[in-house]
Length: 293
Image 1 (cartoon, rainbow, N blue to C red):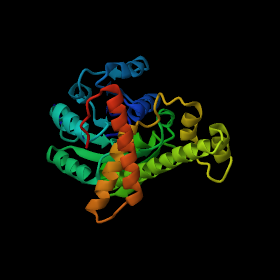
Image 2 (image 1 turned 90 degrees about the horizontal axis):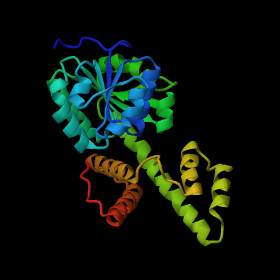
Image 3 (image 1 turned 180 degrees about the vertical axis):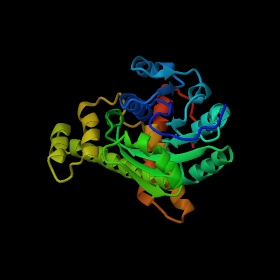
């Protein structure tokens, strides 16, 4: 196979990992007229996209075989290590552009970029802020890091995902750091709202009253409103953000902070609360622990 020499709006795109954000991104790219091939370990998640016009692949390597751009949206560093540097590596031709949307530590992001560069593959780190519905409708906030020329190659694709353009952050690792900053704030805010609900209910104030009061006060925000609706109805499926992934992201944030001599005491305590939730769920369902990074 010949090297890929460019990545414009006509370039085929492979999207690997069709969770909430990955699936939404693939839908959006299809709506924007891109030629999209999709792969997910659980085939059922690919079916709606195949029905919408995407090509389905039976492996990451097959998905990337004819793609100039490969978008990766996976749960953690273990998954990236297995899929990108195991399953996918044989199909990554020199000149391929890999757009990484997984939330990873800055240190691992830099290591991954170096390893891919040795293979002749450019890596753009894309931090996308929003929920699955926003991904599908093209309303994400998009931040990118990596070599400036590589980000320019990816700008057309990334620009289709949001209405406010693409903000360039500079060197590899900064997009991951920004995403972890957002997620640690989200984790702390969500835990705080849950504790406010528990406190109010034990004082005889209904959950409905408290959440309505919050949403009509100066404490309202789109982020809290989104979480408040889960708490109001008691319906948490489909999850807006799985507790396991939040626990992982908060742990990554604490670890990255420690690497830079920064302490995050509130985040550390909140991260432990999420870890406790995940562990309690695992024990209740008899699910073995999942390795994550």
